[in-house]
Length: 138
Image (cartoon, rainbow, N blue to C red; front, side, top):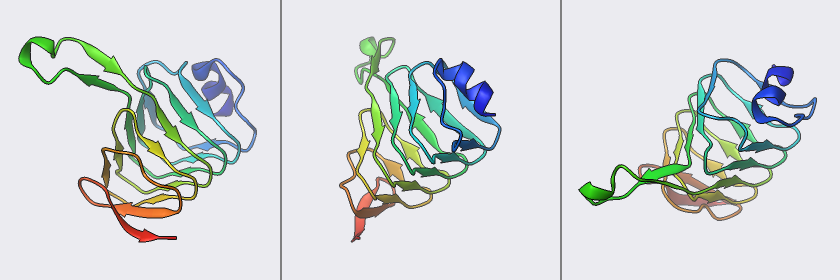
């Protein structure tokens, strides 16, 4: 799996990387992964805007990370707007989370299962819900 992921991203992934298939991506070359990173099965990464995952990150099953958005006005909906997503060190993202374009998830943060992350998550916090809100400081 590491060999396949290295081919997908165009760069060598660390031997500590683990990904349980299936994994879905619309491009792959805009994904960077640190050391000791784990992806559970069924993750979908829309990476045109860039997805940057730091060291010691756990990503639960069926997590979606989107980096593209569309204009809100009907005549602008055919245009895509790319914005990167950053997942900092020691983050745990629970199952069935959706992370929207332009989000940074701060170091040591936890995103509870099923959350929809529409804005930045501060370091050392737990967020939950739709949209994700801070429920605890670590």
